[in-house]
Length: 116
Image: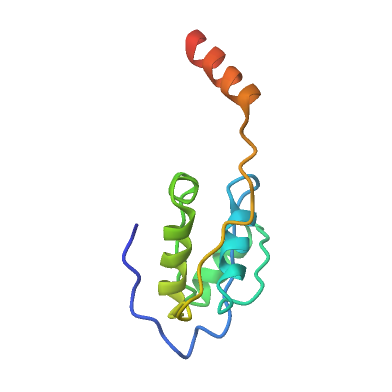
């Protein structure tokens, strides 16, 4: 997990979650929503927005899917730190999304690895 830079209180009034499809953005939105301090985020991605973000000096906080899948609560905690938000005392980050992997997925993975 990357250390969060010092938050800029002047710029943390809102945030964007930009993702490509099937990379865990709904999971991350649900985690942040569960904190009670990060609003009710949704996610969209349009590649052309990247240039506009850079031109406006918007600093991204990249989240890798592998990190999110391995430890969603830690990943959400990192995002909160980046935004300069504290989790209220007694509040926990809740994983509301269920992993879609099941025995069928495991068989496909096993079959793929045997052929590779």
